[in-house]
View 1 (tube, rainbow, N blue to C red):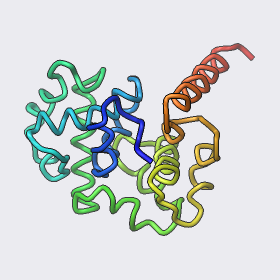
View 2: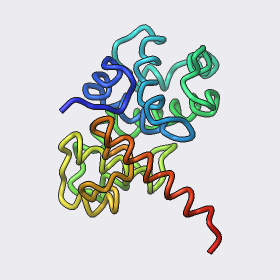
View 3: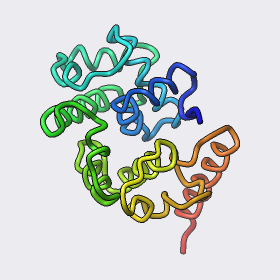
View 4: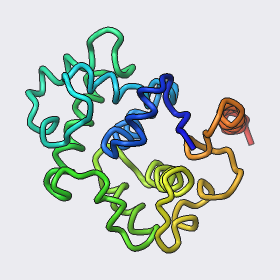
Length: 191
């Protein structure tokens, strides 16, 4: 089943074939539309003159020049400087702990809780985002270590339409957006 996270087929293809691109997209998925976040990795790769992202190269990139890649119009994120720094820090962490191979983070985990813990330990990820990413891996990439659904919490539920993990087409995107709007409205309502 092809991905429907980004705005272009090329961006979705990269997300499917490049684990680092998927991880970068998830990291960028905050304070901007999901499709923008998951399209930015292919744009970043193009700006770097490559077809795939490389954690070693990104970790070693001159920080000012890396930020320029994020700022170039159209910017890769609403907060290009902060996100360039966050992505580069995450890549350095991947190089140090996983030899730069993003897939090792989840492919060598034996339990869902281990995936959540490893993802949450990366710069720019917290517990909730780690659970959402674990659900995305399980639901759309067949990464199913023992207890992955339980570790993902409510995001692992079938048909929940709570997060990016549940976006498989235009209809499911509308359902996820509706859920998020309802959650924001409920949070603003005084008790």
